[in-house]
Length: 48
Image (cartoon, rainbow, N blue to C red; front, side):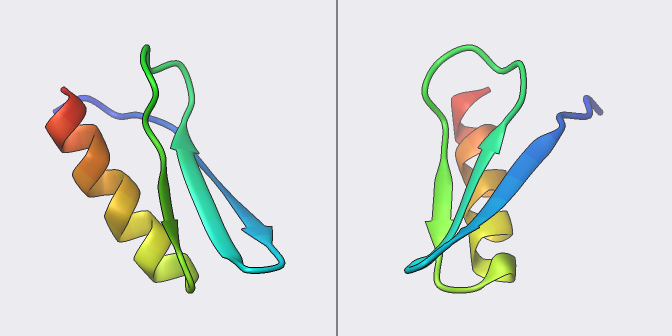
């Protein structure tokens, strides 16, 4: 299994997550940290 580093940033209206070093546009967002983490995990799996 490949490991990908993910950055999660807190903004005024929620959280945004994006992978480091993955080519293409992949991002996840959510109102909560856990939601953004789950969305980016799904987006990365779909992208790969």
